[in-house]
Length: 170
Image (cartoon, rainbow, N blue to C red; front, side, top):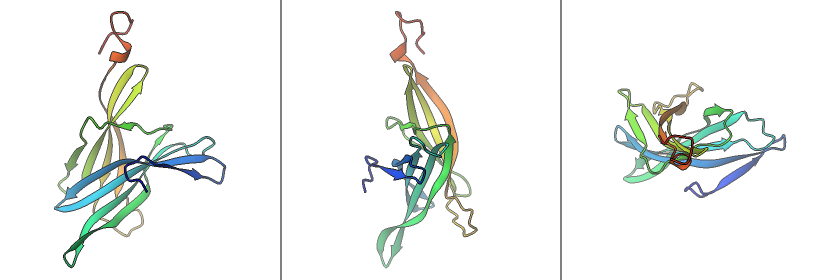
């Protein structure tokens, strides 16, 4: 309903827990001249949830043309892009840094989404990595996007360091 990610929705589960699903990140890209648009979601486990961690999902649309008219069609959607066991809250997308995209020789996309965490006076910068396979198939195990993990990309602790504090600034 609100494509800007400002809305989240509680999912009532049979066990009485209330997991929350929300739009996490939007990404527009092209492969071999074909435009795509993906909305990544996160399911954050609520109190009493049977979920063991954060779960990424996605809906990817492709710009198609028919009779000279362009329109977006759902290319692929999935609620199991990948999970982060033991994690209950998604890292915040860092709008100050740009995402990094790499298109492989077989036209797959590797996407690095910039994220940040603020913890104990330290800002930690990461990239959350996904891969996209545009070669949709009907074998039943096709996953358009897969979560590959996160990589550290630096940080700073200016909120928790200085001459008066025991922690050196880095």
